[in-house]
Amino acid sequence: MTGEDGRAGSPPLTKQDFEALARFRFGIRRYLRFSEETVRHHGLTPQQYQLLLALKGFPDREWATVRELADRLQLRHHSVVELVNRAQKQGLVDRAGHPDDARAVRVLLTEGGDRVLARLSALHRDELRRMDQTLLPPVWHDQQDEPSPDR
Image (cartoon, rainbow, N blue to C red; front, side, top):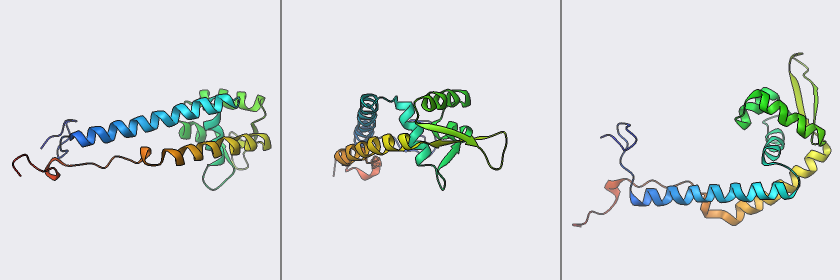
């Protein structure tokens, strides 16, 4: 069987699948809009908040390289360099030499950046709690799971 996306073995989507996808997409967009408005209200751009969050949430250490941040933020290297430059001018991040690679630079949160991030992240956590079920991933229904009209 070929599904609507052209992949073999993928059953066609049901009405419930479309409703679940639409609900999930609505939840994502609602959360992103909340985030954008909240961080702007606190004097940051959404990209700056994402940068701070990527730094604080980087696995197993308190800093990241520009290359690692570019990967986490899904941005080009030069875009992250500019983002870090602006954040550094605002006192949100600092740069430091990399202990193992003289070509690389570590990007670290400042105390001020950490305070702003903590305040904003608490607001984001609270919004996610309010949204509760809206952001649950869809549960897929196969057409064979649905009762047929003659049953």
